Each structure stands twice: as structure tokens, then as C-alpha cells.
Image (cartoon, rainbow, N blue to C red; front, side, top):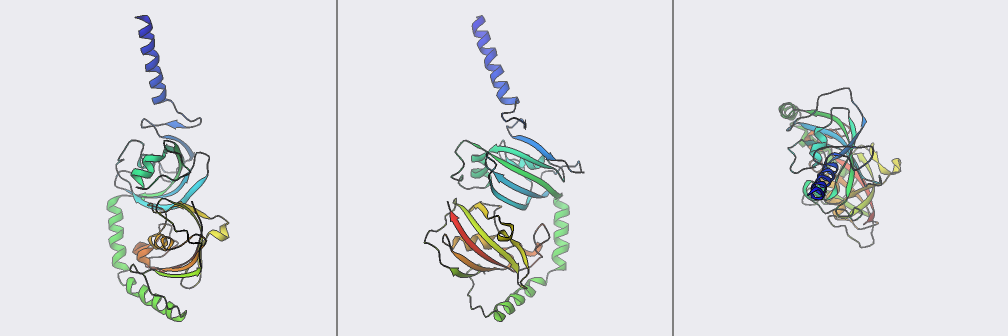
Length: 288
């Protein structure tokens, strides 16, 4: 009887330890199993609520700290759909906070991104997500701002089309758009290997406006962009469509109308204005 009691007691202690004590040194643990540590604390103490629109800087990493995605995203905070969801991570941060979270990789890719898990992450393993909460606003404020903004720029759509037409005419680019409106021109042929959804790809690109001014360049940063093709929050629609048409080692010039880029609102960073067509020179360096 005593032995059985001790066995049950040890089992309960073991379960309690797994549930309430962190698995990773230096991290705290939530009730749902997310490990986290604060890297920076902002000046604000208010945190976003369900339904708010948040702007975050994201980095996805392997457990060895290899970054395979980095970028800013604006999204609506929703009720977590499963225990350990990344939405729980967002809800923990006030404006200006930066934290690193360790979450289960499979539900993040399968349920949140609705994609296959990358080949370099083993099934059943964890991954790191670094999140910086840049800003957030209520759904009501977001909708009111959107309505006021759309009234102000309601004529910009036609203006953009005319500017793009003049650009193509001036550059003597006889390119027919795809069904979506994307302009694609192959510069250097690839090796025949095509990209598929779920592949991890490495690209270099330079992005500029129609007036020739650059707004981004992985070449100047000396940091190629690596991401999982076919998943949400990765690249703009125009780039995803173009990359889907390319082969490994191929280079292409693409012109992306705003409805395939940042649309009537522009980028959340303010770098890309509303209704702005963009030019990208892209090299698909590697498909894994």
C-alpha cells in the first residue's frame, strides 16, 4: 500500500514538473506550454485585445537560432484556435515589447500557416519565434481610419494605372500581363528545377519604385531572403506568383501593380505608399 502511494505521488510530481516548470533554461512557461523570455520592454503597458489590428516584426528561427523568415506583418488578433497558438504570444506583448517564444512547430505550420513543415525542422520538434510589437489599434479605429483614407484616395487607382502605362511605354517594354495583372520578364534562364508549395527557397531581390529609387535590396544588405514557399505572411502576392513561375538559378524582372503588392493602404512601415506599382529584380538562388 505504501509503495503504491509513493508511486502515485512520484507520478503526480512528475506530471506537475512537466506542466509547470520550464523545459528550456532561461525561459518562463505559460499554462499552455509556450516558453518565452522578454528581450526588451516598451514604454506602454496596454496590451492588444482580441479583434485589434496589430503590427509586428517577426523572425522565425530553428532551435539553433538559424533565421528562416524575417519581416513586418499587420494582422488581426484572433482568439487562439488551439493551445499554444502564436496568437497567445501576440496577446502577451505591449507596444514596444520584444520577446522570444518557443512553440511547437507542427501545429504552427499545419494549422496557422496551413502549410507543410519545412524539411529542416523535424516532426514533433519546437521552433523559436521572435516578436516585436510595433503598434496596435482597435477594430473600430482601424475601420474608421480605413474609410476616411479610402475617401481621400479614391481616385488614386486610375492614376496608378496611367503612371504604369506611361512607364511601360517609355521603357519600351512589350510585356503582356498575366491574368492577375503581373508583368514578368525572364532575364537569365534557370536549371529546370521548379518551386513547389512547402519548399524552402532562397532568393535575392532588389525592389524599386517606377522612378528608379530603391526601397529594399537583399544584395545591399548582404542577406539573402529565405522562406517557405506557399505560406501566409511570407511575401506579397505578386512576388509569390512570380517565384512560382521561376526555376532555380533563374533571374527575372517583374512589375507588380499595387493590388498584388500593398494595395490601397500601402505598407505598414510607411515605406510603400498607397496604390504604388513596384519593380523587382529577383534571383531564385536555391530550392530545398
